[in-house]
Length: 129
Image (cartoon, rainbow, N blue to C red):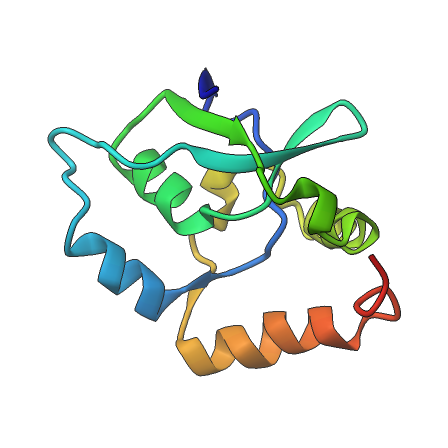
């Protein structure tokens, strides 16, 4: 069941936004009347952590939203929680602790794959879960 939380409450689990995904989302996102599927979150160490939907959350931030609709990730049992914890640590270390902190971190698809996806796949935790 979706719930509404302050937009600065969910913790990002990625350091970058893929510009190509942002461009695609801009085609359907209505800044005058933001409507989107609730953002899936994990509950890790008493924090809501975005497990997906960073681009939608970022667009809601750009639209001036003060709250965001979240829902428990339906795939939580299948996700690699230790890797998500590590990703949150990486975000915390680079001061990316809320959706607004992703401003200035929109990168090309190639850069996203090289700097984020490859980093996650290189983690010793990647195959665990």
